Length: 177
Image 1 (cartoon, rainbow, N blue to C red):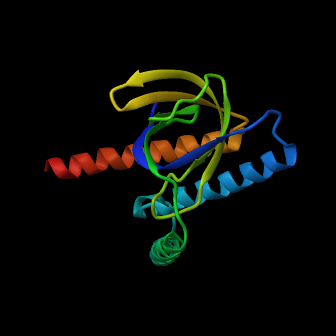
Image 2 (image 1 turned 135 degrees about the vertical axis):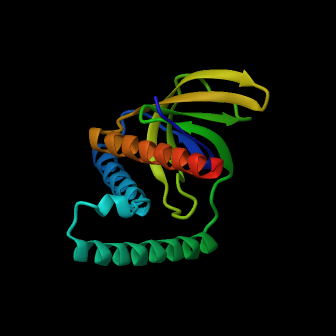
């Protein structure tokens, strides 16, 4: 299973089940919107190869402008807000593993705020249940399984993880030359 492994701003808070249905729909809509933006942010010119030649150059130019505006907006927002502390994580579409010094009871249900892209300071809000805790050298490795993620959000998260994996492979190949 592919994962994103990184140190990212992340925080969590315990919640009680069941989660309000309306609030859950809002969270899923926001997550879907965020994941679509993050997926579009990293598209490259190869993604437009099926377009007509004249349309391709226009799309590239527009995409560049949107990327630039998104980056500027993200930096502006970052200057006005305080993000949670960074934690080492492994994220898959099924769950997240966090290395932290915190102690949490197993089977606790959490609302996780995960700032997956440092240039775009909007949190991916994920509900999860702690499935295991393992002591490691740097603290505790806490495995959390996502619950109530929704098929669309899960699929988009899979795509983002795969896209990240492709970019890492391309980067490694380019640095080997």
